[in-house]
Image 1 (tube, rainbow over the protein chains, first blue to last red):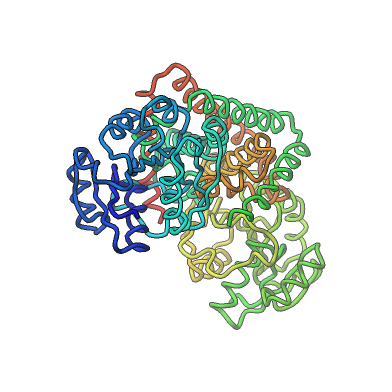
Image 2: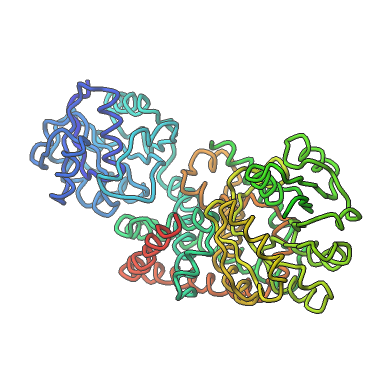
Length: 284
Length: 284
């Protein structure tokens, strides 16, 4: 039975997870650990967590969730595994999976660790960004499930299923390659769109007045937290650079079509890409 | 008094305009003209227009709205001006303004034309995409207002204000330059993001399962109509190519920072671009 959950990092993801779990299982006690005293106090006030805790309490945990930037997760995970009991499961929720799997590959408690990535989020961060139902109908990618003790992962997956996640299994390298395209690239594309427009439009009033809802949704991810995203790009460097090369090549080709007045080509590029409608209909 | 309105092109923009006007001024009769018989019939069935009409009826119009792709607008506008009465105002709603202003610069009825661009829309098209309140609190950019007969533009602007538009005045060249950044570039960035992901992810299931809401909103505009967007990129070629060059340069620089392990640089780029939050708060 999962009764004591310790969330390390009570921000958007850790906090939202806490809210959903407390909602579905009122008997569970959720403890929060965060290097920011402010965030812990906010999380307590908002009812996101029940109690404040420290790393020294982790041996009392049934489940520990690591919901901090991916570089911090890689650095604290071995320590966390040293501190838990034999019956504790530690799961991380980071957006990169290769490095974290590598760092504990030979850890004596590797079987107490579950590498996962619930694909859900918003552009906001911190405990105030925590919301209910964030994970409902969302995919949770689990990596190297065979390396986690069956009884531990079974209980945890049961809980995650209860809050609406749909599990999918993948190896860490495939995860990092695919996610670079469908998530990391979207963020860079939005950040650079925002940068390009800000640089050009020195007069903000022009952006403000002229930007329709199209710009707003395309640039939305440029509000995301640099502290969270920098280590993701660092850990997934090779894949991210590859996606950027493909993206830049496609943009350059589209620009060339326009420059060469090949508007039939421009039309066809867009028509072919309209196929994204069918794919997105599948998502909704 | 505006009593008879002729909408040429009963799609997303023309249809939405008709719905709002009929809602605010029930006494107005809205006539639709469209080269697609299907669209006209749909618009009639949906109550978007009251009657079907032809170009030969335009002399009875108080207001004619051109809401067709920008190349078609440039090509039919001189004819339309030839067919109207001296008391008719013709307004176009296209996303490019230089070419259309040029084509009628010396037309004897130049004073009967108002060049405008209501910055509103969705990624859908056709009469079924027409929705209420699309223009509420949206900017309508009017170009060369001094070249339109005051009494005619005054009546039309009164009507557009009534359905919620906020007027802003600009010359056609400035409009086309600014809009390339805040609208046209967003569309290309989304189309090429969609293309890059579709090309790489041969297995759709992977996109379907892994794409969070982040990808969905960033790629949304890639659902847009190629028939509408191709002539926009053609007419605004010089500006669009320039925005693409800036965008590609920013993406390349970001890629170089990652490749050179300059993650402080990566962090700072994102932190500076977070400023878009303040700008977008202004929009909402």
